[in-house]
Amino acid sequence: MEVRKLVKFGETQFQAESRSARLIAHVQSAFDDSCVPGLDSFTKTYGLPDPDDEHVVAAAQIGGAGAIVTLNLKHFPIDLMPGNIDVQSPAVFALNTVEVNPSAAVIAIQKISARSGKRGTAMTHDEVLDELASRYFMHDAVRVIRDSWQ
Image 1 (cartoon, helix red, strand yellow):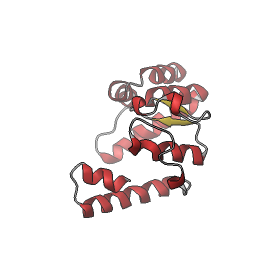
Image 2: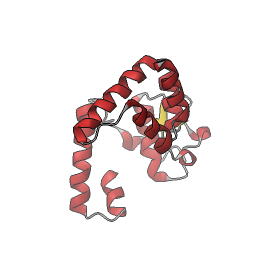
Image 3: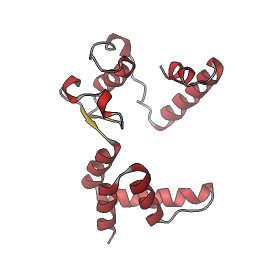
């Protein structure tokens, strides 16, 4: 799926296969249960506006996910989702996550800030939060984090 998408966007077959393999290895190293076997039997069964998105819903259903997080909400109409799967924007997902445990969010921001220094100029906590708000539109999640920081 990923290889086909990358080729569609202009990469050679070799480049797409190499990049896809690196991505899969990286994701699997972070999430050992990230690969979901048996997707083929579920694809083409949801009637999504873009058939190339069928595997996302299949993986969510097989993997027992409670939500699909995407900016592309129109490709995942809630009325076509299996009953146990919600569809949320990253901003809504971030807000929901932060509201469950604001202190964990503060720790995460501190870690992001510390890690940013290893790549060059370190970002302050406020700069990280400003970036989340301005670049990713996570204004509400940022507000909750800032309120809990005080």
